[in-house]
Image (cartoon, rainbow, N blue to C red; front, top):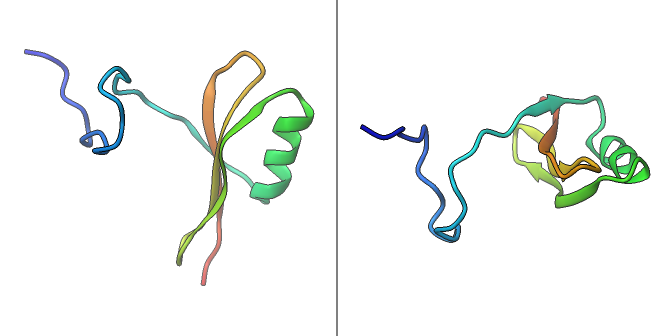
Length: 76
């Protein structure tokens, strides 16, 4: 029996990309956190994006390539 993912992969995700876990870090300001990642040598994979009625997030890589997301919760 193989490992079953929690969620199915999106239809547009290439077959060669395996299932993965991605840590999310809650931050006070997504844009400031993304700027700090870039200042310290990291890269942006998904630019800061609003999630309606939820907040704002971005997916980034640290300088060694590890992927994580930053999330700013906003009550509306």
